Length: 305
Image (cartoon, rainbow, N blue to C red):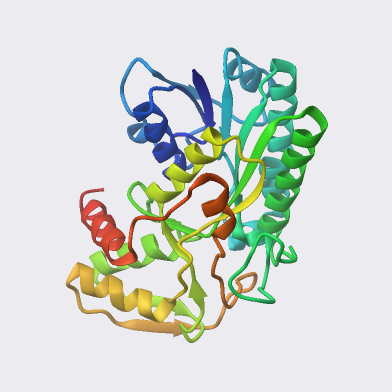
């Protein structure tokens, strides 16, 4: 059995690749290495890296030959970045996904795990957020991921594919490098190691659902194994304030921390927490990594990254 993992040299994708290799699958990785890294790709005869863009039809078609399933993680990521360049965001996330779906149809591949995002929901009307929560994204990124998700589910209905859309909340962990537009954990971790103040936008009372990347990778393969269909929330089910996160990271790193509060940023929700009950019921998803343990592992890796 062989799977195509788009974005497989990236942060989350590289863990999905490793999980698949451990299960005995052959893996083809399609990644343009714009945010991924070759060193994230495991060595071995069962893995093949193709450097290319998911929007390139000829490259995509070549990668889909003799493939049994697709994990689609290649994306332009980030609320703030999408506000600055919404056309690029939609071109990669919406049209790139559509190009992949057309390639799958031509190749006869009928199993897809699509990496979606909690950004599709916008500011929550209720907590925790379940799959039926209204989708009213507050950024072009959320809009493009929602569009791609709807296209994937539509193809699943039209052609009787197994399509699961996994709506990730705040994923963190090993292989997640600093990006000024990215997740708060690598930003805080990098600043802690440099001795710089931690910048918190707003009062720090905003909450996020932080989930370790190993739990996310397991969720991908569980969804495939159980032939799950539809959208599913993937988080820890626990809400953590940004202030508490800063304190926890300072504790696990053993470093003093200074906090610099700045004005809130546009396109960012106040509170977020996942209702993961549907994933638990449908394919046995069970987050195993507690935040403190995950942060200790991440900071130990970041020192050597």
